[in-house]
Length: 110
Image 1 (tube, rainbow, N blue to C red):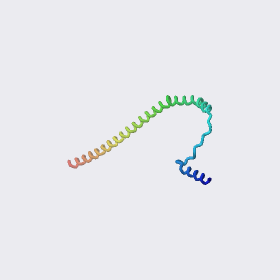
Image 2: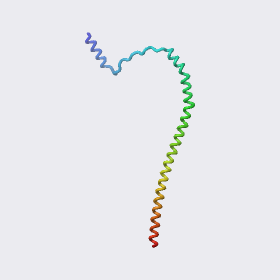
Image 3: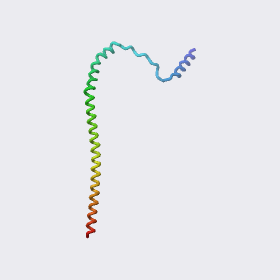
Image 4: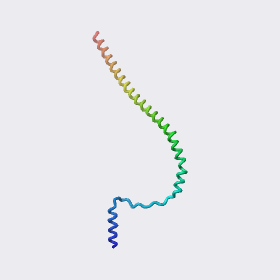
């Protein structure tokens, strides 16, 4: 009989779908204590929500706008520096070509 019961327990354990232990009941909670905590903390939560909505959010929006402006400025500056470097390269090439042309003209007139 005992063997049979042990085998049944082993079978039940093997047939479980998960490895989690069986759930246990939590201790009783005090409803009045929770209600008091809610009433006590509700004004604080209310003030925090108002602070976040009317003070922090607008500051965050302004900071985002400022950051986007800075990012756009840096992109424009990068483009300008690329253009300037290209212009400088072109100017150096043209001056070199002008120098060569002037040398050729001097040699041809001699």
